[in-house]
Each structure stands twice: as C-alpha cells, then as structure tokens.
Image (cartoon, rainbow, N blue to C red; front, top):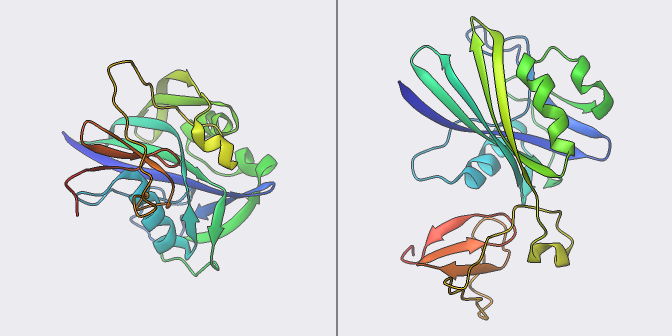
Length: 218
C-alpha cells in the first residue's frame, strides 16, 4: 500500500469559508462534492509550504500563517493508497479568486456548510475547526460510504505567538534538558511566514506557523 501525504485547507473570512465544488473533471474522485482546497505534498515539501502553494494554485489567493488544526487518516481510500491529510485553517490572505481548473470556487456562509454535498466524514470534522482543540481522526470508507471513524483530541495551549495576536496553537513542550536558541538576528526568521524561530537539536522551528528546517539548510 502506498502512503499519500496531502493538505486540506479551509480559507476563512468573517462568517464564510472558501469551498471548491468539484464538477469540472469527470475522473475526479471528489466529483460533485464540495471540498476545501489542497493537494499532495511534493518531495521535500513541508505541510505548511504545500498548503500555501496549493491554495495559490487552486484559487489565486496567497495565504499567510496557516494554522494546523488536525490530521486525518483515510485507510485504503483509493485502491492501494492510504491517505494522510494535514488540515489547516487560514484567516489571512491576499489576492483575487481565479477560475480554478479544479472546480468552482465559492464563499459559503459557515452556517450553510453542512447543507452542501460533502463527504460524510467532512460533516463530522468540519465543526471541530471551530473548537479549541487539535484532532487526529481516522475515517474508513468502503465504496464511497463512511463505515467507521475514531478520533483523539488534544488541548491547544497558548504559545508565545499569542502575544503578537495569533490564535492558540499547540505549544512546543520544553524540558530542562532542552536548550533553546532564540535568535536576535532579524535575518533568522521563518521562511514561510517570517515569524520568530527557535533552535533545538539542530532544528529551526517557527513559533508562529510551525515550519521546521535543518540548521544546515542554506
């Protein structure tokens, strides 16, 4: 079985969520349904980088500081493929919507989201996006129908980014054994969102969006 890593992004503005009606490609496995944006990770790409790229390619919008809200597991979703999706919410963006090749883009009132033709599992996890907890869920489909699901929730904890007005995200757990470097050089910033970073065990991690890279990266 092949493992497919992907992103699923819900771009939001006050009271509405950007959705994609998948009606343009007959061979689309999502044909006729409404989805968030996103797609497969490219080799060497982080989930955050993939989320930003996919939203831009599919909608023409440039999102900033996407928030990772959960992880979805879809065993044997397609023949011979297990899918794992990183679920993001993005509230900050620029740009103008394009005519997407993937489907028809439309801003949908949040109270109408569950009235759309959705995957059965989407009706379950979409309300979780409004809750202050991180989720890891598994949805099992057989012949396009949801057979079972399970989920584990993790509490969101405040991190230093909140001081700058960012919403709550999973905090980095620190112990007495961890040695952190908080850069004072303004050049040491996140490549994705430009936020502050910390160094631990030769890994540089953004405290805002969570993007991580090796210290040896150019």
